[in-house]
Length: 329
Image 1 (cartoon, one colour):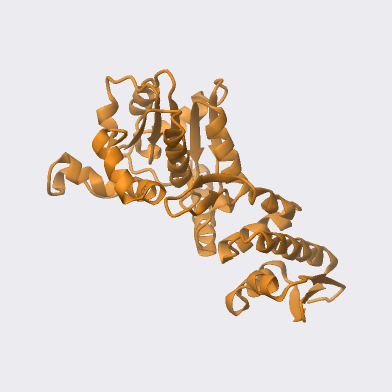
Image 2: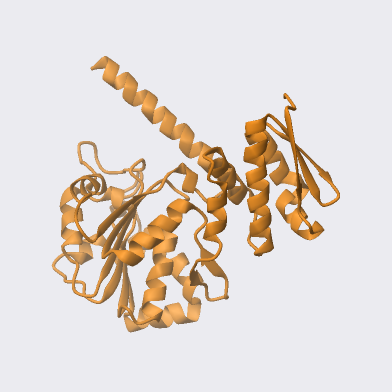
C-alpha cells in the first residue's frame, strides 16, 4: 500500500472510540480491507494512512461512526459496511441523518430506526402515499418496517385494523402435502409477520387484538370480493402473485386505508410461464398518483454484511446468465 496521505481523528472519549473500533477490532479490519487503508490507534486518536482518496473515505467513515456512537447507536458490522458503501459514493454523512428519526417503539421500549437511506425513502413513501411497493432483496427490512408502521397507525387510531396477507405459494412444496387444515398449513408462511407483530405489541396485546379482530392474517385468496376500509394492509411475498391476483388485491382498497406491497423479484416461485404480478404492477403503476414504488438494493441489506455479498454474487450470476441467453438467441 502506498502511504501517500495521513490523517488523525480524535475520538475524545475512550469508550466511544472502542465502540467504533468494534469487538476485537472487527470494524477496523472491515474498514481496512474494504478501503485499502491502514488504521492505528494512538490514545484516543485514530491515525489513518493510505492514498489520499482512500484516506478521505476512511476519515468520513470514522467521523460519522463517532457521531453515531455519541448518539448511542449500535455499530455492528452491517452498519459499518453500509457506512463504507456510502463513503465510496462520497455520502458518508448521510448515515448520521438516519439516527434522529424513530419509526416505532417496540413493546420493550426499543426504538426502531431506519438503518439505510433506502429504508428512509421506503418509510417516507409509506407515510405519504396510499399504496407503496417495497421491492428488494432479503434482509432489507421491507416486511418488518411495514409492520412497524402498521402498528403505529393502529395505536394512533389512524386505522381500525391491520390486515396481513401473502400468496400461498412456496419454494418447492405444495400446501396440499402439508398436514392440518388451511390455517395450519399457511401459518408457517406467515411466521415472519407473526414475529414482527409480537415484537412490536408484546404477546399479550397481540393475542387480544387477534381475538378482537383488530389484526387479521390470512392467505391472499381470502381477500377476493372484499372492500378493505379503514385498514392498514400488507401484502408480503408479492413476487409470488400472478397478474390477476395483484389486480384483485389492489382493487380491494377502500376509504381510509393504506396498502404496502413487499417482495423480491429474484425469488419468484411461480410455475414456469407465469409472470409475477409484482413485476407487472411495478411497470404499469409507475406513474400513478398516490402510488410509490421504492426499489431497495443490496446496499440496504441490514443483516450480516455477508448477506450483502451473497445478494451481489447472485445478481452478478443472473446478469451473466441473461447475457449468455441473449448471445444464444
